[in-house]
Image 1 (spheres, rainbow, N blue to C red):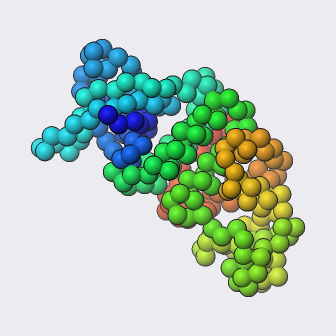
Image 2 (cartoon, protein in one colour):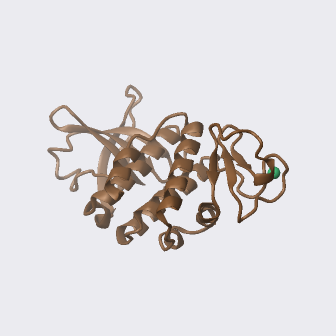
Length: 248
Ligand SMILES: [Zn+2]
């Protein structure tokens, strides 16, 4: 038995579904749920995102896909399913997982992050902060988080009250004293945004969801994360556009 989440569902023929799973112990993989639309015995619950199941999987040597022999629902994040803004954020997180990790590579820590953010999101109204929190921590777990402490150039501590500039190509920050070149692809991060990023990086999701940010700070952080994640993942997160629209 393996615990996991459903990331993506595609109907296949009249009674089957192809499912992308994110398993706690095994990472992501593709599986087929044969006869899911007909067998209440093997599949007492529908498969849906934002739910945790225990799966029984099998793989026949002649097939590419795993077979889902049974799926039992362990938990439903109902608080997410009732709110379109939360569904939109959940979709962004799931797109990150689908695009950020290779199939069948275990990511136990990342699985723990996703389930703890979903749990917090159920009861929280602070969608934008949980969005930033999720992106920062996913990137950190994928090994891409920049150094928030020292300047890339002079190696001195970055000032907390200045305008530190993020350089996406070198993957770090330049202190005000070292900023000689024009802005280019960089982005200036003011004190409130910088402090919020540092705070979110070292906090649990409950603390982040209590953090309230001003509109301009939210904008700076959103564009920093967009440029930073797209540079490193080398692809864009398409579901972000809908999230931005519904939390406006
Ligand atoms: Zn410097």
